[in-house]
Amino acid sequence: MMTKAIALTKRCRFINIKLLLFLLLSLSLLSIATGKVNQGNQITDTIKPDSLEDLALQRAMGYVYQDSFPSAYACLDSIIALRKSCWSAYVIKAGIVYTEMTDDEQFDREEYFKALIDTALDGLNNFLDDSPEDNWALFFKGTAMGYLALWEGHHGSWVKAVFKGLDAGKIYSKTVKQDSLFYDGYLGLGTLNYWRSAKIGFIRSLPFIADNRDLGIEQITLAMDSSRYSSQAAALGLAWIYIDRKEYNKAIYITNEVLKHGPIGRQALWPRGIAEFLRGNAPGTIDNFTQIMAGLERKGNQNYYNISLCEYYIGMAHYWMGDYTSALNYFDTMLARQVDKSVRKRLKNKYEAAEKYKEKIARKIEADKQRMKKFF
Image (cartoon, rainbow, N blue to C red):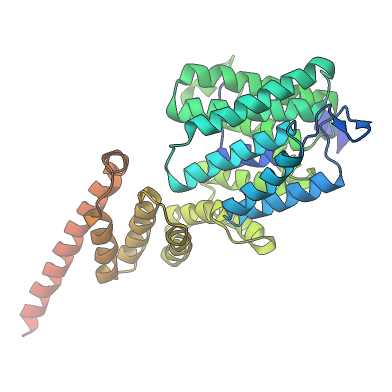
């Protein structure tokens, strides 16, 4: 295992990547940092968690995967209240804030998200001034930089996203070069390596451009098999990668394994539902997106972007099954709902597709009527 880890480290290269959110969240959920602060009469000089902090981390992570964001916040806030210099807790909280914004498809807490990141980076940089080789501090700094790259890639400047992604990659690389058994670091490296190569398309065929997709899969698999905290997130990261590679059965197998051993939350239901839809499995599509939609409706405070997506996928599945009444019901509900202009713009392709399939259904129904007339 050590030989494999060292070999993987030597092959790493870093260019831009559009980071996957749930992977970055899991990267931040690795520990609760103490920093170099006075805890009673003890001075700590590492970010590595103690047993109590580790327990808090596990609980926060569990709440996230159960879609229980308030409980996750409460867990982290209790730690921050006890230790203001717990910099990694700020990184974790920023990740949860972004995850919840994505879950709602409402990105109205940008200032709060960035304030958490800024606080964390200030503290981590000060810590690294004294302990520049501390892997946990480096790891959380890389994660924070990855979040900023993610935000810029989705909502800001791709130029900034490129440089912040490069910075995150260099930091992740340093952690595993210093300790080839720092398995949680391979999740960040693998994510960067796979998606960087996946997004550059035909450029991969050029002789001076490395195709690191297979390397990325190896690294994420290593994190899935050997990391302390990142196994579940690494598994879900591989599921999204298999969807990108059109290997839908593999994606479904992995998400089934995750759901078998943990809570049934939307973080796992989304990739499984997308994989079922893309492979044309109508019952699987209906089951997954019905569960996702029910969870979003229970949560409330929706702008209906994600709920509308669920209705579209479920409507399409009913269409495949020949249940035109149910298909029309879901399409009509989606199309009739009043949503914000920005949401309607983002859903434009789905609205157009729903209208097209409504027309197809109308033609099929009319054709059936004409055929029936011939017999009577």
